[in-house]
Length: 337
Image (tube, rainbow, N blue to C red):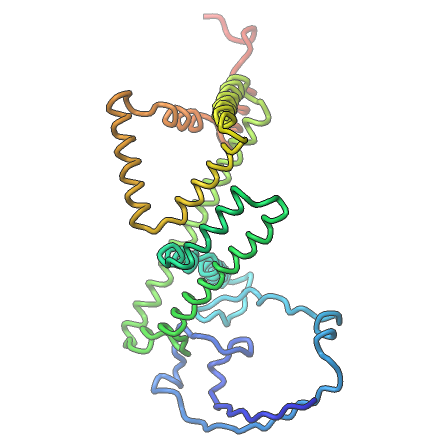
């Protein structure tokens, strides 16, 4: 088998390449600030001959998987990191954090879920799949229903993503950068440096918060303070007892359909459009306000929050050990008044 194709290739300056790939530049190179030069184009005629089926070779033959891009720094990510230059290290961390933030952006999936709930046909399909999975389907039917639901969701994600790409097509340079003067560019660079430092501080603060939470959990699990561990055990036992009581009430539903009805209701509420969900939220807050008016505010969650705040983290536990070992003296060693 053979294939013949003609491809027109536009010639571009080498400044547009980053690691041999085209990408959007945050800063316009000096030689290109007057505009992209017209370097012409090349017409390439290609002929491909296939003497055997290439699909088994693609799947079975060993392939050197390309490694992710190396750690880079700079405005455009085209400067190597140097350990003797702290600025490049900070810039590399900022570039990696920005890339991770963009990769973890869930706005596309949220808009896809919102449009799924707003579209009658797709919402009906998902409701039918959920009803069959939670109420009628056998356990071996659940993987197929799950895959069908994922296919419907991914189709909606592809539609939303296509609309975004058509509305904001990528360019060689950021639009705002091309319209700025030299003074404005310097101000923008200074703003980006300050923004990078703020991101690093926020990242360090979030890591510190999560580390403190993990240290508190380790303190509780190690039973270093028997009273705090006892209180946490009582709270865990009370929550388990409340959950067991709730499941016991569900067991009174005929034919053992109580848990399935709860799952079905939760899924149907999640698939409702935004106006209906807003109506349910208003009813919920009205019922909560009426309950607080009749019985008073909720005291359980503030109590648990205060208890969690009193659990020492790593620094506090270390301080207490040092204080107990080197500051508190035995009764026999205390001087007499």
